[in-house]
Length: 71
Image (cartoon, rainbow, N blue to C red; front, side):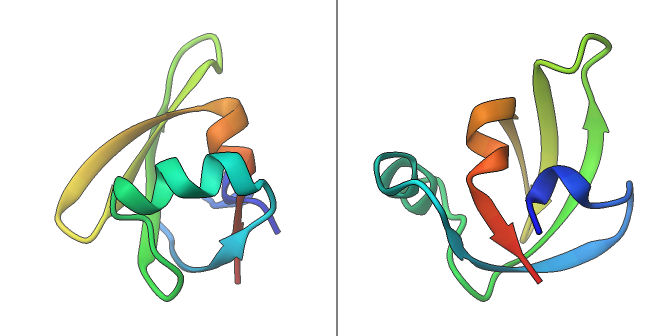
């Protein structure tokens, strides 16, 4: 399941990534396997998604968010 499928306010655990190039960027941003994340909001036109990861709010492009596999 992709992180784009998280319902607003629901926490899910990161299982891994399906894109190696983006995984390096996401790891440096603090999105690690085993981390719990929640979708905070979506931008009006769907280009940007905002996630709560630990105590941080992180904005991701749709392509970046789609690369995150959650369980």
